[in-house]
Structures are given as C-alpha cells and as structure tokens.
Length: 112
Length: 117
Image 1 (spheres, rainbow over the protein chains, first blue to last red):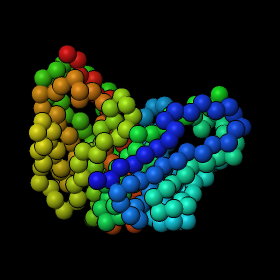
Image 2 (tube, one colour; image 1 turned 45 degrees about the vertical axis):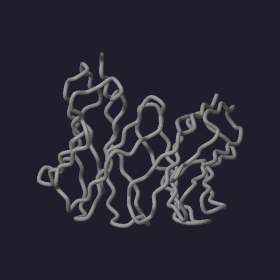
Image 3 (cartoon, each protein chain N blue to C red; image 1 turned 135 degrees about the horizontal axis):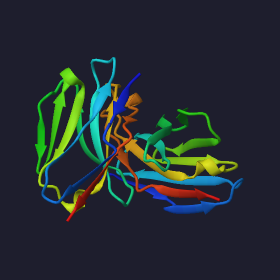
C-alpha cells in the first residue's frame, strides 16, 4: 500500500532563516505531487504541483520554491522566511489516472 | 473558474443527531470530480469520497451518505447518528481535469463540525 511521509512534523524558525520541508511517497511510481499551505482560518492553498521529476508548476507568487529531485520526493524550500510563511504545510500525491489526492501528516511551521 | 462554497462555517450537534454538510460548486466543464475530505484535530486530511459528474447516484457508506444533485450544483454530505469521533473540519473539493495530469483541487473553506456527547 502507499504511504506518504512528511518531516519535520513541527518547526519553529526565525524570520529570515532558510526552510526545507521534505515529502516522500512509498508504494507507487510517477505520482503527481502537491504542496499546500493551510493558514489559520482553515483554507487550503495550492502552492506547487509536479507531474514528474524536475517538473514544477507554481500556483502563487511567493518566496517559496519547490523541487522534485527524485520520482517520489518533493521538497519545499525558502531562502528567507517571512512571518506570513507560518502555517500548516501539507504534501499530497495522486495516482495520475485518478483525481483524488492523498495527504501526508503535515508540517506545522511557526516563523517568529 | 471553478469555485466551491461551503456556506456553513461551524456546526454543533449532540451525539446521535443527524447532520448535513452543504457544498455548492461552480464549474463550466461538463466533466469534473467532486470530493469530500475530513480533517481531524491531528491535521491530516482524510479522503472520504470521489464522485464524477456523470454519476449522480447517491452513495452510502456506513453512517455517511452523499447526495449529488447536478441541477442545483450541490454535493451534500450527511452523517447519520453522529458520534464524537466525527468532530473535525470537513472540506468539499472540485477538480475539473478528467485526467490526473492536471488534477488540481479547488477546496471550499471547510465546515467545523463539533459533536457533543
């Protein structure tokens, strides 16, 4: 069966520091991968999605970036965090031939 | 552009009551998919159901049932005999792409359901 992992689970970082969040999927190949942010107030915002290695699409302009160095690895990064980057970051995958997405446990990021 | 509206923001019921969570969507496509997700306090979104636009049959899974009505662009979710463990935020979502290559989901803002013992 497929599983999706995210780490770290929680992170507290100062403003201006770098960020690297990792997401890996097991038990499937060539998944579509997604990064979402959920700020206080619950709404889910799609940040990036990827349909293959090295293929990244950005949904909103921001100081975050994403990379997919391997088929089942998706990384969210920032060179300098802002206070507004605080939130709950969720990684998701979908099989490709269907549309439902399966979510990881999330990373709660607090920028101070 | 596609849009999902969950007009209810918070619902509180007493255990064993039935509760319906409303979802209204907008899309120009004839082929689309609708979803419901549950987000318990732990934070992880749990996939509950996917329904495509050509299948208007209602679905029942245990205490959960879904009513898809294309005429009113609604995809409502009913929990029968609610339990405390049903307390969570519930999201309705829409995807217009018929294939997975571009299957971006548009989420509603979610409904916080509290089930009191």
